[in-house]
Amino acid sequence: MIHYEDLTVGDTVELGPTSASAEEMIAFAKRYDPQPFHLSDEGAADTYFGRLAASGWHTAALTMRLMMTGRDEPLASLGSPGFENLRWRKPVYPDDQLTALVTVASKRLSESRPEMGLVQFEIETRNQDGVVVMSFVSTSMMARREPG
Image 1 (cartoon, rainbow, N blue to C red):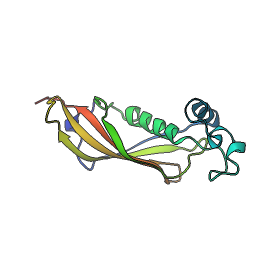
Image 2: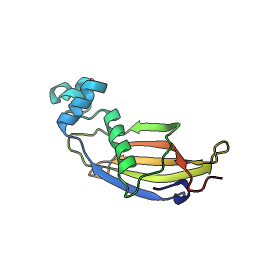
Image 3: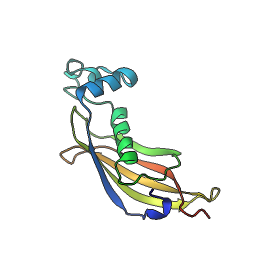
């Protein structure tokens, strides 16, 4: 497993690719974000999207999966207290090939819990053309290899 001590500020990794089919996007939208432009080409035709587009929350879920399963070794994650600056920058369309560029932005030891450190990751999700479709900063609570 990748622990707090294994990460260095400035480390960058590209994860992926992953994608979602039209059927997967529609199923996600029906359950979690049933806006017309996430449900059909017809519902999206006269909108900014022009055709079926993924829910931003679906894009976030795909990115999260890459972050948790896209490495040779899993992160020794203890969860997250949250994220900041979530931006959906461009639409994601069926079968777009998404990658996540993950950079260690900062890290610090926990003052109250010696078994963990806090790591801030800057994440950019990009499509097959290298266009950033989503970005955010995530704080992760990471297990230490040797607490305290």
